[in-house]
Picture 1 (cartoon, rainbow, N blue to C red):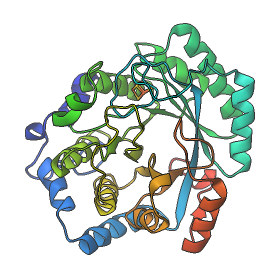
Picture 2: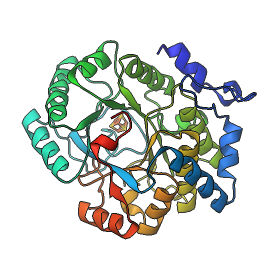
Picture 3: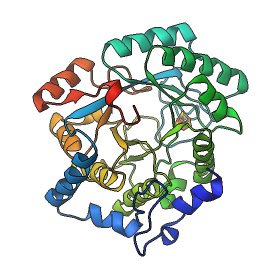
Length: 345
Ligand code: SF4
């Protein structure tokens, strides 16, 4: 997909189609900012009911996909994302680690698979991968894929040709978030624009890699900004196959440490709005899950979240232990999604 096409779908809300319910190329309805805001403003029970209706039309509502995220290169990032403990300029105590060896990554991927993960995501704290690093990550992708796992990578901005290289290695998903609404983006990051992000997403799409793209809430943004984030994701044409919704994990030393915490119900509303506006996407309950009560997580599943990061450490912040996840699944009657049940398989 060309950047121009991408931007038609994600430009400012005034440009998002609003009349006559036009459809995206994949047959999904386009969503205006006002329409998504209308979802957020619904009485809670009505919003959950709508989310459940949409969810059950497209998925087994008692099945959740398990992904494992591994930081293959940690810390020392030159970017200034205000939420991130890996930015070199913030003093957060994260220790820099060089790119892991392929052997190490493969043995951790094998362990993740044994614990039930179906997708293995490899994250590296780079602005953009250097060619020699991309070759190493491509080897990792090739090996992890050969274990029968879906592969995902998040490596920063990609230049021309890099997405194609990852695709050739067997990469299924590339994660690159737009983070927040356009009006708030400049408050959070100054070292790259949201347009830079759309351009990477466009390269990923053009290479035939599935898009994993979402954002972070609880960064002090307004409900309108949250709705704009969802509207922008939902009006990508097509919308991302995978939509991680993160709740800010506040880390001391980052600029966003100390920001007012988001009401858990508002987080659940964000999940429900994502589910309704992106019916066939895997909506992932991502960072911030460890800080949530079991009850809030249950509400997120009820609202249509059907994917979690599971088991291993979530980049550099903690993630609930696999065993407590299993117990929660048992209490809720949720089954882990098998690889063959994943959309597209
Ligand atoms: S979010 Fe990614 S790009 Fe931003 S500072 Fe952290 S590692 Fe770097």
